[in-house]
Length: 212
Image 1 (tube, rainbow, N blue to C red):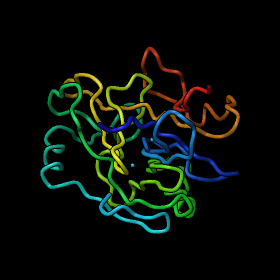
Image 2 (cartoon, rainbow, N blue to C red):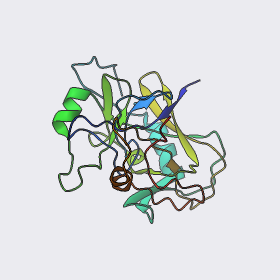
Image 3 (cartoon, rainbow, N blue to C red):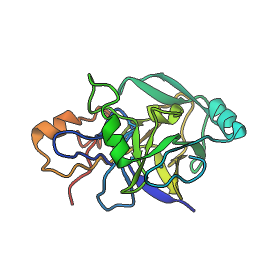
Image 4 (cartoon, helix red, strand yellow):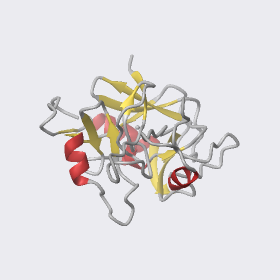
């Protein structure tokens, strides 16, 4: 059984990998705060802290995901991932794929797009490693945030899988709670910078995780 993952963003000084359009797009496993990556909140041989490695899902897993989900334009943000058939609760939908790199390398690569510095495809594995979904990634990097998500990210070793939290209807957009964590005071400006547009009646107005 895997461990639930919360995407979290990390900010070092004035710059650094931070929350983006999706999960992961950002950072760490269990509930305690830690650096995070972006989708936007975990590939083949396990890479050590200084090295990188690409992990690919098996062709059968990829083809199965392709029959269940599809990337389309989203009313929430940019692109999104939608169910193309009914999906039962508990279904493992897709692995968050990409290149596993160190946080030092993630900081060096940041930002992926200078015009959108808060939009990354990083997903935090632990305090030493992050998945860069921009390199070797798949449709999972386009899953948007929601304060009332229908999916969750679950960690299994150094891998992260997206699973259905509840039954999902055909045509419904997939989402999970990024729970972004930034080690600084949550000012109105910061919350606005990471504003949420999920439209849920329980929307907290930001993709940032509530302070404890």
